[in-house]
Image 1 (cartoon, rainbow, N blue to C red):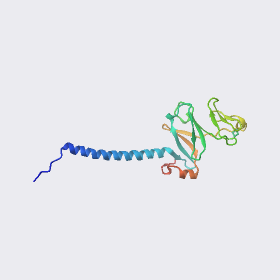
Image 2: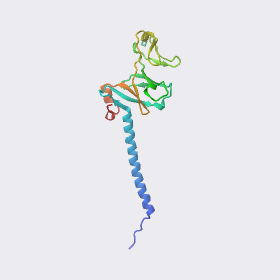
Image 3: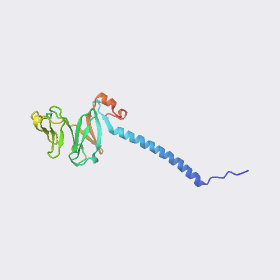
Image 4: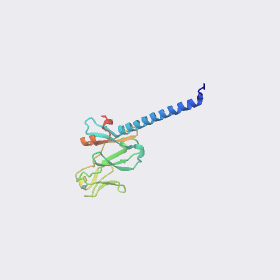
Length: 179
Ligand code: FES
């Protein structure tokens, strides 16, 4: 009768380690995946109580230097110029202005060399805060529409209109929450 050779303790330990290591790796991967998904969803959209507006994630405040600006598009397709005007980390250090001229709806653009927004349709102009300084918008005292901003931690959010079809078509309705 032959004896069954016993596995050395080292071999058993290594096998258990490999099995448990694989299990931990899989669990960790799943947790990381779900965690990332939840984080992306949670940071994307926060509907207001009436569901007509939503706080949308824009960027991390650290990723925008003072004086930088970029174009942002709301879920409804409206163009917004978003800029960092201060070095702090509060909403007051940023500004979000509609890039649609309030006169007749042409596209305005930022002219860094003139420190103003300019509308080529009728030579309308606005200062860096969106106040009208020339052309028909000045005559009619029509500033650029300003979008509210807020900073949560280091994340910048913008409050934008949200129609019903957009809300239903957004990426993460189940992860949205009222604030
Ligand atoms: Fe912009 Fe007329 S549409 S000035």
